[in-house]
Image 1 (tube, rainbow, N blue to C red):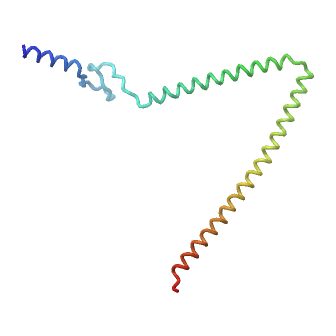
Image 2: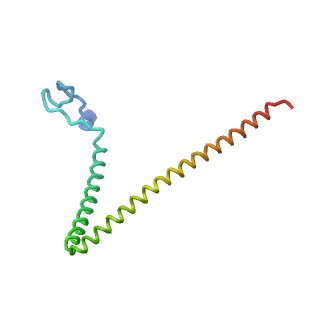
Length: 143
């Protein structure tokens, strides 16, 4: 009895173990049989590609929602009279011009503030360096 149970345990262990034996193809890939089709290897990029595909699907969904709403707005715009269309277009152009002027002036203001902050930072650095230098001079000078 003990021998037969021992043999059964060996058979079970062998079934559970993976077969690591394989053949190599000309290109160095593993196959189950000689001249057989290669095994599918685990790709490092598979999980990354899956996440990217999910993000791309979300972006496409959002993009199509935007296109759908824009098409609806366009249909409403096409149904307007010519006078309202010209009035609407003129207002849009006027607003666009104002926005452009505002952003151009704002950019200049931002750069001016940025340069002023940098100048102030440099001044404070010089002050702190001079204070540190004075302390070291006072410590090193004999009394």
